[in-house]
Each structure stands twice: as structure tokens, then as C-alpha cells.
Length: 126
Image (cartoon, rainbow, N blue to C red; front, side, top):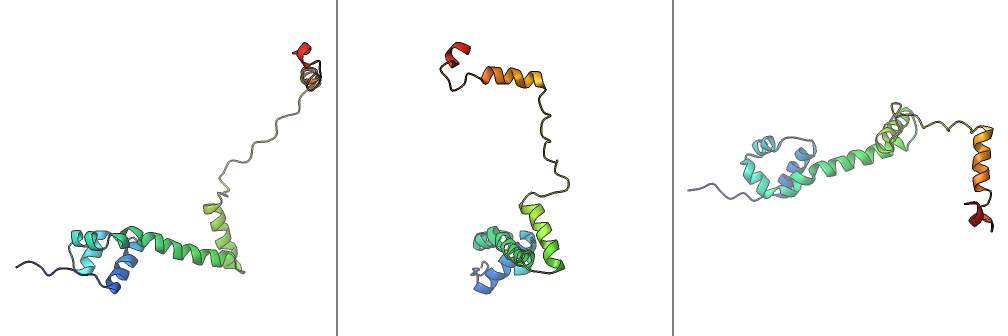
């Protein structure tokens, strides 16, 4: 006689999703649930695949609430958010400086070449 067929309950689904969200390995989740890893994968695929997304969403929501609040924790959370989500970093290369100004001769040459732009002389000069 074979094993009894596994039928997940709502509580078991929440438990699997929570463990997957915390990053617990599937083999360990199966052990806690008392089922084979193949059975876990078969019956709890959505919970295993989406548990980390739902958990990350909860953490991000909480971090956002803290970062947009007041107090010392808000400053720390806002700095973290901006570094991770907005790309702010003290290690990022600083913006390129403006190019040095052109010398008088270089500017005069450019001005001479562009002087006919927008006039009837453009066809004669270019």
C-alpha cells in the first residue's frame, strides 16, 4: 500500500510561502512539512516561486514607510533607499567636468564655418 495522498491546507500553503520568503531551501521546507521534495514542488509551486517576492514586498513597504517618516531611522532608511533604488553612491564616479573653454582661434574657426548657416550664402560657403 502506498502513501496517503497529500492535500495542502491553507495554513500549510502560508507556512511554505513564509519559509520560501525567508530563503529556506526547498529540501528543508519539505523536511519541516514532512513530505518528499517532489511532493512539495508539485503541490506548492506558486508558494515556492512567489514567497520571496511577497516577503520582499512587505519589507520594501515597511522600509518605505520608515524612509518617508521622521526621526533618525527615517534618515538611515532614506539613505539606504536612495543608494539601492536611485543609484546614489559615494563610490559612483563623479560627473564629468565641463570641457575647457575653446581658445580664441578655435572659436573663430567654428564661428566662421557656421556663419553662413541659415542664410542664402550657406550653399556658397559649404
